[in-house]
Image (cartoon, rainbow, N blue to C red; front, top):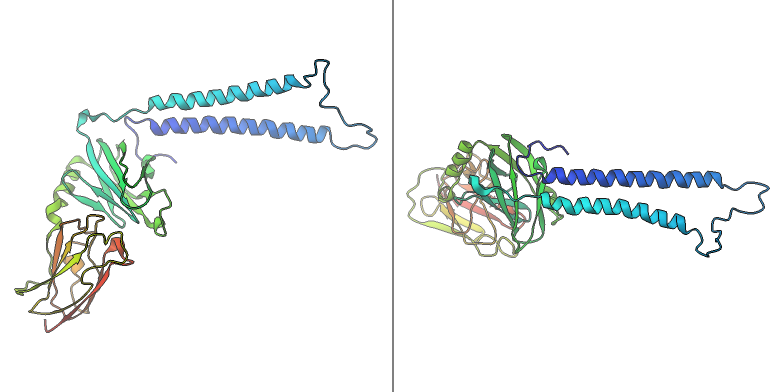
Length: 345
């Protein structure tokens, strides 16, 4: 695969491609020689009529060593080929250079989880999630700290031809320098079979200018994860609190607490969701709303993606009677709930 983003300092991909070509060429050559030799012998010594005795291939000389010269020659040729490719393989490891950290590299934490990637930036900003994006500045060394909180994953960026395992309890480091601004759709994938949703563990790579990267950090810092989002202004005296309990990100026996909520307009129709789980990120995504009601997703700025981490909260005030269904997009198979709103709006 040809890289869409060129390399500036890291020659790793070129090294491995060169080694692969060596192995492919030598393997093809060996296979061709063996095949041609086999076909020659099949044709040359095929069964014929009026042949009383088959050729004696193992005629032993007086020394008793038999056909030793052919054996030694074969071993020498094979050994020489293997010695060459092994030398090139071990020598190439010395060409893998660490990143140059003198130019203020960007450090980003990457966390794998069934079946999402979460990217945490130096100022606490977070991106990722279903069809999310890793945002990086162009012409800058980017160092990723990669781990997992559940099972083995493999983090890869196809356009850069780089990959690193994401393992529970282990922090692996990967670096690159992207030199082309652009949005690379579905460029980040998990290359390790990690469960039934493995096929959908896909994100995008967004390479932007440094000014664009700094603007992204400012717009997605921790302060934007906590706030009030409402479909209308309300002076309701009471608020219903819904907790995302500790462990809900990995324990399918847990759910929103409570998951079935009944509120009355003008009394307690303000609902605050609080994230108390440090095992995984979450969000609140409304999958259906009553006819005529504004979708709270848009009110909370969730039209692209919205994410909560441990300690964050988000508040909605619902003023249209009816049933609102919601879920956590990260764990939609078990984190689901319903809000029933009564009264007159």
